[in-house]
Image 1 (cartoon, rainbow, N blue to C red):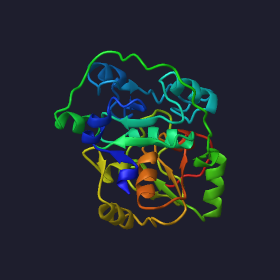
Image 2 (image 1 turned 45 degrees about the horizontal axis):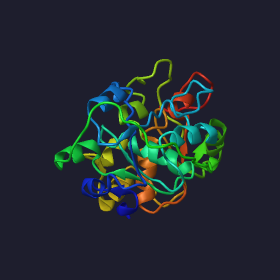
Image 3 (image 1 turned 135 degrees about the vertical axis):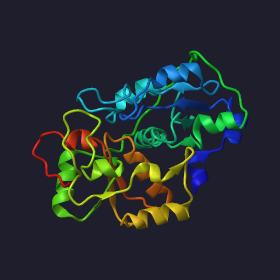
Image 4 (image 1 turned 30 degrees about the horizontal axis):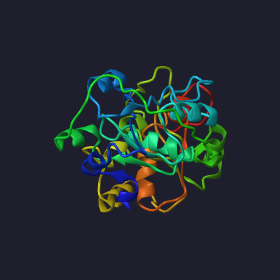
Length: 279
């Protein structure tokens, strides 16, 4: 199952310059320890890799971070990177699988059928002894990507509120336990503390190790320990919709085909907006 979603550094090194391969560094910084991912990319990246800025290829019509873009925005951005509907996109990140699953989710939600993640990210690439480069990369010739945006993958605030009222779909929060339990303040200013009523907590970093997901057996044990039914229809959430994709992808790896992501996540729900919360 993992081979359907990941490639190894050895595989990528062999296929790096195949005509249809496009490699993207999709790193985004955590709000708790922000840094300049693009500057780090300029300092070192996999040869031919381009930087995919998830805060720029996004819906800028609202003040929430890295919201799913519309089809036109996505088409223009990835087309300019030499990506069409036949390209094999390989995504990696600088930071332990923090942001690569979100980019994978964005591409799949936009109808890209050929997208995988580099297991272990750039650290695994370097550990294998493969070459790195610095500086800008000239993208290949522009191509045309035609997105077929699957809107049902991304839930909005009203849809999640209805799920809370109905209580018939599992909500899973990927934030750290102290934030979920209202024992630690949110890193984004102006947000309340707590969680969406009825949700369960699976901190995203429990699921990963050195830039890869843990084994299926380990994932199943973690979800069970957190009271999650891995087969049930589910919605994942987090601070801003970034690590919610880590939990979503873990459930997908375990065979759950009915997992959706609350795009606004706590950045939206936690505002002083009258929405119900639990602590």
